[in-house]
Image (cartoon, rainbow, N blue to C red; front, side):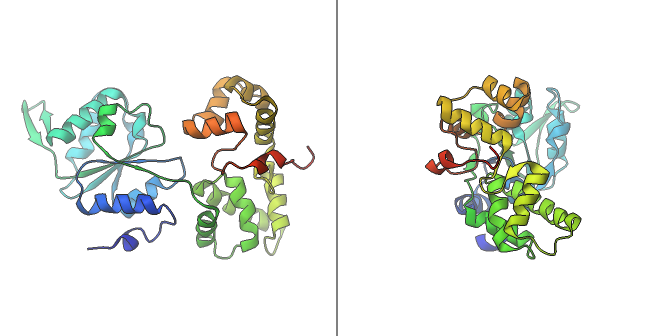
Length: 294
């Protein structure tokens, strides 16, 4: 049998999730529900499990056939991965867990129950609230944890072996602790290096690129808008969604979309009451940060 280390050799960090998912992979049959922030590696786990990805974005309306079709077409032993499971209508989710419970589906042409293939299910979400309790209770629940700065540095360095190690901390701060964002920023820094004609990326050059391309201060990892939000939280003690919209100069809908909805409730509570930007550990030093030119 493949070992845990072999199965997840390409995944840095997330040791608790690795252990739990490996247990599931080896001997558990109930659906697996992976919960974590966007960019934390839910899809990567499914890839390491050898799962077949089912496109949930094409599943609209309340017809169960939209989700039943890929299940019927699967083969025994397959692992099926459904990302953004929270986006599916409640009636489809209700029908799905009934199919999983019984191991059969009702064929409308034959007017009888037929067995589904012997498959296992992996679901992923970054929002738990829309999921029915009955659905969540039927799953093996695994939550992805925040990454340490050392783990993020390893992720960036592994994907960019030629990158100057001294330049990585600025990239990590700007990523707010999200691996996918850190990798994207690293690519942007390398592209900026070519554009500017740099032979290598020093700390100062990375900070200059972050400022000139993203308006992000490399010392704090905060954009000008994020810095304003933090400062207002510190001044007022808390902040509302409408206040965020006023501060960053957008409507409430965009404020929710850009700053609130992608976050877990606990993380938004941290930024709205303590001035902590999501993805970064809470510490008093945030109150000492001053953005250049502010």
